[in-house]
Image (cartoon, rainbow, N blue to C red; front, side, top):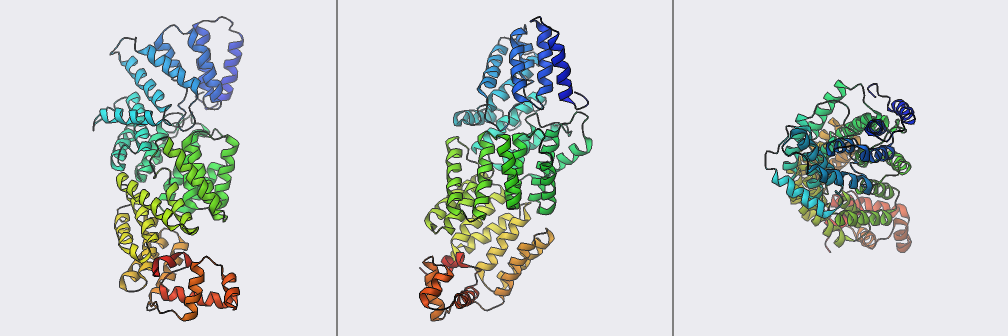
Length: 527
């Protein structure tokens, strides 16, 4: 086991069990050791062997130590049998000598496992949030068990939106500061702390911790640990605006296709792929998840959002929208309000707009903005402000200015660049528009985003032409038909002209109106 060869260790332990016929505590010890080896590659067998060992152990303390060998199933669907084992042993521990340090540590760890097994239940989330508040502003974090419980309570409160981003970041940071920076966290609750910090946009904290973990290494590190590091590193790089390097780390993770994939690693990779907007990469991750039989709401929701993104890029907008709305209903039913963790609404807003349902788009955008203000993370709030500002066209310029101000306090610099591009386009011309577009281009170039540089430069070309809404009669006819949802060819057929003539009228109209395409027409023309 110490050499990182758990499958070989398991073979020796099975041989030992074959020669041990007596149903006694020594057999229980072998079963527990076998389960310890198996937890890195066969979770079902691990749980089964612990269940076989429990009746052979004489004390509640021994049974608690055994059941805690089962690694926490972080984001998958909780197995009822495992939850029952944990609950039964936790209840037994109440009868043990109170105040004894070892008993207290085991009781806290059992509580953490039992509470996390109910993380898809709204009532359990509310209870966990109350328990977290009861620990006060300076929760106890001196022992590993106290940190384990705190990590679980904080993740539950983050899912439910029971704390602000600032509170969650501060508490998660306290846990991470006390955790040894070594590889080996894939089988603990540590990934919950990492995901919480990502959700609060505390990317630097995770990056610093991971760098130490990677340098220190561990002789018994598993493939699951390596995958977690690769996945987390990819998301850090995406957040820092370094897509090329981020893609490299995703690829490194994908080369370990036969490794022990944990739900947390898959979820983080899916989130990184969503930000990269790489269809082929997204499809590979989705295929891997199908092969692995992904379970649990956290992972399936992340994968649904990623699949919707792929569908939308293929032009299947109605299917993508329905998938996102179904995902939103599932999350709501479980009491999961955190849109920063599962950003289904921003995608749905864009799809509603493209499908012509402006009212539904605005309703969802208002919901997203209300949540973002409650959560308080700069990038989440900035995106929500940009989303609503884009829907309102010229009337949304104040919201875009506010979004830019908020995003200046965020580490997500490309989000600021995207907002400045949109602000420059909505302003159309003038010193403010040019300044916004030039700053966007500078940021995009510094962070290796050529597509954003191109958008900023295109906006500058437009901004330097005096803006006017004086359209010719032919341009007005074409714009009116576009507003009815007709394609260029259908407009050409109705007006009796060539499609090239239609394209020319549209290009001239967009230039005069200071916009980039037909999706922005509703925001700049009177009803």
